[in-house]
Length: 213
Image 1 (cartoon, rainbow, N blue to C red):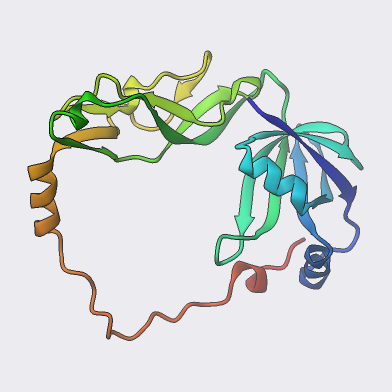
Image 2: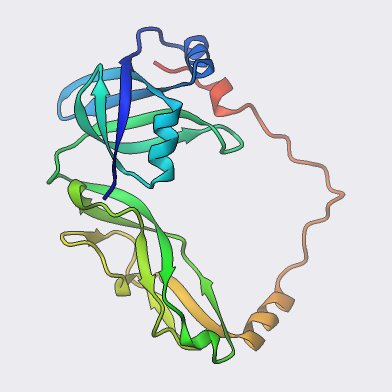
């Protein structure tokens, strides 16, 4: 598990205009709550936040206005998904169990690929309940025994010690199909939407619509 450090400052001014000014200074607004303690409004350098996300961290060590261990409960992005608008952080202890979504990463070489098959990831993320101190960056799936016509399900995944699977166990994660079957499915897929159709009207972004407390 990777524990990143987030240097934090107390955030005094609230509301949409204040948070926009904060972001222009290279800071991300955040809220820390949990364990029966008062909620705290914080500001965190965007570089710290981006590093934590890039490294796949779920647990962070807060330093500065607050010195505590926290779990990244939610990350709010802008409309284009390239800028973090807000963080929700929860106080946790090392042994406390939390629910977390983890990405899937394939390991090994599927023999089915040499048998004329095509390997495809059917589910890119799974949910588990895990002690905070044991949260992995991702779930690795070994495909060394994946042959044509076989599927690895969520129940086959190797989880960290003390973790429980929340995703339904019969959920297909990775499969290997014969290339002829893949081609046939592609031919039967519905035609692409008419590009001449009127474009969908997209509303305001979350940043414009929401006003933080």
